[in-house]
Image 1 (tube, one colour):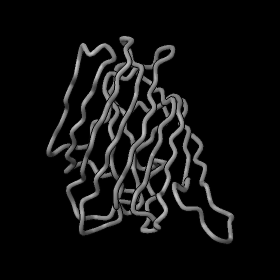
Image 2 (cartoon, helix red, strand yellow):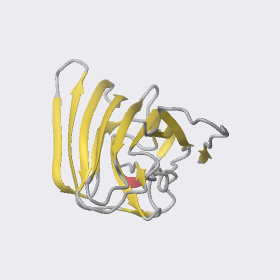
Image 3 (cartoon, rainbow, N blue to C red):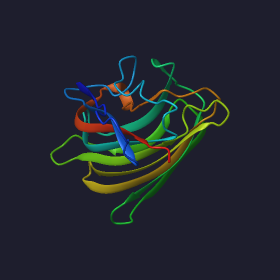
Image 4 (cartoon, helix red, strand yellow):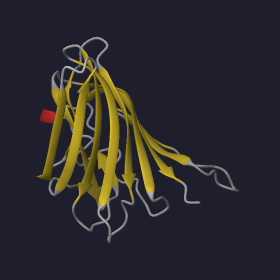
Length: 193
């Protein structure tokens, strides 16, 4: 799995808007969480809002759930005190699934992810003011997936980490932790105006 750190070489003035900070492209069951999670130490007070894009991610095993977690201190993945609510809608309106918790080990993002031909997911995640110690870190996401049945699903969700500790990064664990066989994960910071 390659991690590309993106740095600006501009001397003046910096661009306003989304600034790319890092990109990772996992392969062969590559993890996007854990002690070596490639997005674990990217958040700083330089930005108040961060965005993560996932493009064409494919999981290693079939019929799994994607979660989101936060890191503190650069290397410590937090595995408790999350609250979340996510809504999953299928393309033919045959099913609408709501999943939520007020005290979970992670935030559930999407379920029934597949790894067959043409299956995968793409999405956008926003993480708000993660370096604050006085306001809880919140997130919202929208993910589109073509999954195992096959079926098209849209997932909308929001979550919170209920603690006043500064967050330094984000992870994307897969159920049973078998990782990803492909995809591109990119983190951006929103310039302060």
